[in-house]
Amino acid sequence: MNRTTIAAVATAPGQGGIGIVRVSGPEALAVAQRIFRPVGRRAVRDMKGYTAALGRLFDAVGDVDDAILTVYRAPKSYTGEDVAELSCHGGPVAVRALLRLCLENGASPAEPGEFTKRAFLAGKMDLSQAEAVMDLIGASGEGALRAALSGRDGAISRRIAHIVDALTGLAAHMAAWADYPDEDVEDLDINVFTGKLTAILSDISQLLSTYDQGRILREGVLTAIVGKPNVGKSTLMNLLSGAQRSIVTDIPGTTRDVVEQPVQLGSCLLRLADTAGIRESEDPVEQMGIQLAWRQIQQADLVLAVFDNADKLDKLDEELLASVGDKPCVAIVNKVDLPRQLDDTRIRSYANAVVYLSAKSGEGGDTLSREIQRVLGLSVGDPNAPMVANERQRYCLLEAEDNLRQALAAAQEGVTLDAVDVLLETALDKLLRLTGQRASTRVVEEVFERFCVGK
Image (cartoon, rainbow, N blue to C red; front, side, top):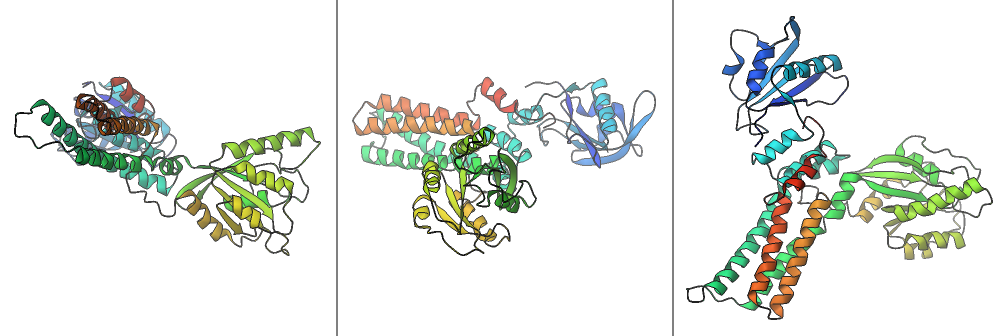
């Protein structure tokens, strides 16, 4: 482990009530003692872990600022090392001055994610928990926050450990039975063996099924609002965003570009995209907007297809519905305050849900919110459950699943147990890479280079 002492600003840039500089390493308390004078007669070196002291920061010229020093003694700290956290007034100048004092008195600048990386190397957390720390920092909504906290508390780690234990026991029994035929080892019943392997595969498949929901909670849902001109797309955009983000007029073709706006819907973030009205047009600029609308449908995670309650479906509406394919789609029949002309039979054959709405008055808005969450599978999801957090974790699980499927097929076809054992060991390696127990240095570096400095 790197034994240098590092320092970085641990609070967000800009003005605030306080600013914190974190110092970690074998000389952390020595650095603090050179720049901080506690009120009273006690010395920094005599402070116990999990204690704080009020005092003053000083340099060669004199006092710099009031401050509070909080001490964490190894190994009971975030990094597993001695840690000193110095809190001063939160102005940018004061915080920069404090960091400069730390660097001039023995600390080195921390790299992105270096504090959490040291926590991982010290065994304070595994790799999946470390990744959850960054997800906590970047959480875009309550659901993402809860999912990240669950990951930080070890939900997926415990699930992987359960799978690893079951697979290790299976592999050990098979190896003992094959390698020591003269010993008193329980016979390997191939049906029992394949049954247990099938159960392990089921656990992995169930865990993999959480990836899409986790991605939605973390990244938000790219949501395309589409339809013909004047059906109320821009009014819907303004209703969902709670502000006038799109221009609303009775003139067809008003929206010519994609207008984007993030909106929190329950526990989920919708990345709304209001698009140009789809119609036949001779205007080259409007044609470009319409092409963007078609493209947005293909790129979207969710389509909100808007129709006019006072108008009948036509060829363009049918083409729009067909273009959605198997994407999640909520059809919105707008302008319910007008006499109904629309027959929604064809719409229901394409869409996952149909909601009747007045985007102008907001009538039906609560129903729309519930239906969107239901269609996305978020209304019954548990953000505290184990959840695959990123593509790296998903890839490890997919590779382990593939190895185990091959092992199952080989065992059922009577292939030699040595070959089956190799496949089981390979699957175990993939699962242990997920939590970092067998992760390469390069993988570890790639994880932590995504972090911000100071965490």
